[in-house]
Image 1 (spheres, rainbow, N blue to C red):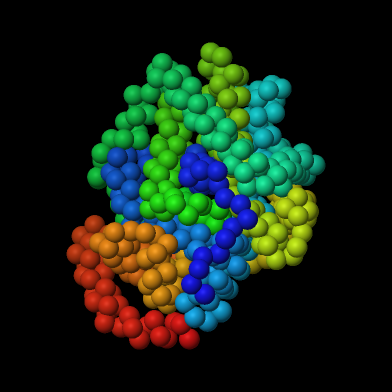
Image 2 (cartoon, rainbow, N blue to C red):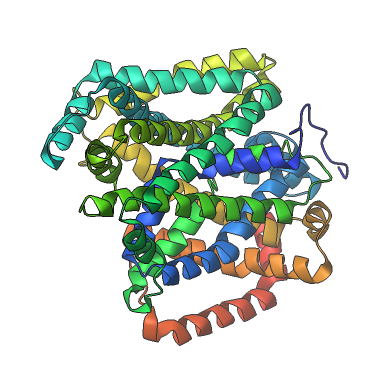
Length: 486
């Protein structure tokens, strides 16, 4: 098999893919987590390390996933199977596609619950349900919001329905059309909030918090955080990017498209920081990370602002759109597979998937209320979904993808699909064979708590290990390719 698979549908333009992929990457976590990590771990120094990690780990892996998708023109399962078959390799590798699709579905099963918080708080902001005199009052509102299964279940169900309604309309009429206004709308609202922040009195402090080049605050923990976020923020190893890549037109440059998504994701995250932290600092609050910042501190700050309700509504609309663009991407792999393999319409596949998603997400939602005592090994169902996907499935899936691309498949496959100049292709191949796997292994080991790498004075040792791995890999690669190919 030497010819590419032909898709039934494609993005109308490369820009449609960039918007959709950026929407997948910019979720709730990125709105608060990246800005907070930036301020906590050295400001501009952290951003610089993060960008290096994006280029060394995130971009090569994302290029690989997009290339798999466009070459195989199908869901993660079908695309990996077709590309592997083209190289005459073992079909066992298609298990990576199964894991990616399952991973995306599992993430979405608890993500719709978290996304429901943003929709719920948008309603509360509109109806005056966020009145409180202190953080304790806001914490009580947050707890009450989660303890009521009918309330929390309603909002998570609404997210599920909205997601399936958009996905059911198709790639162009549903996904691309929705992100073509949601992503620009999100950026416009961020710009309005940043504009307010400039005159709030806390903008200078926020700018310093985010961009001061403080290398003394950049510890080994901060470097690990930059590396981990560079991998997770791009929605890698969850089936989303690979499936979106299957709709990418043949003439679009994968390298330029990937860099565009990475830059847009980083810019939106930093813009979110410039929108959030001026409000926090202007009201003398602590820029703590986590849900507390978005759902406790910010609502309290909006109350103290002139026209606070308006800006609060704008913020939670933006947050809700970020949640929705991510949820759309995570379910597309499953819907795509059902359409391609079960002979059913996209609308039927979307609503059938939605029913199963609703059942699983309801179990995750109950972890906050009536199922609070239902634990296994000390973890609720919600926690298990998060633990299995972030600690195991995503790192292992990403590692498998780069090893498959770097050592197993015919080199012509990705040379043709990526269309890079020889020296750039050599650089990409070096990254996916050695640098990206090493980075993912570091993330994997750190996430499991097995050990923590200590950087700083040990950078020369780490560089020496990298060079040694590279030399061994180059010497052993023919044998390693034969072993992995089976």
